[in-house]
Length: 211
Image (cartoon, rainbow, N blue to C red; front, side, top):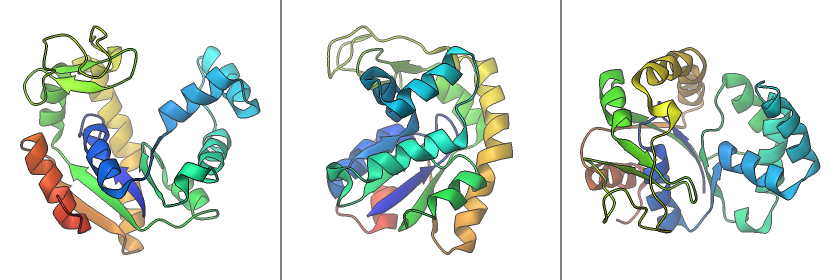
């Protein structure tokens, strides 16, 4: 199964992607992680992407699409993949259709005011990139990552002013992607308010997966 996860920054895509990954036994493709991996490995696409990022510029669509296409061709994506953070624009969605078909696009719906509150309480592991929340999904030991034991931190992106700016970009650029998949009959939507388990159950019910 090839599934696209849509939703505003902080809607819970990363957390829910892990649950879906375990159920479907397919990898999560995050463009952020793909960029970091390609740069760390020193691939041709990674070197090109790094030159843009070092210059404070956005990585062009063709490079992002190249990374996604390259990852999809790998052995671990033979049974499908979950796309987290891609496509971000209708242009990316249309380009994606030239090299693969997706089964569904799942949108996790959360109001902006809830996003701002949620992001203020988010904590992220700088080593393994696991995310937690001081209220909704706290680590077992306060301030320490469950997975690798690293000290958790607060990302600059989670500052309320930055969150509001990111939401503006999301509504302008990424929200139209929902309409694109609605027109294709592939859009599924779930409410993203509630406990992590409640949201997971809604998603699994919508996708017809066993909890």
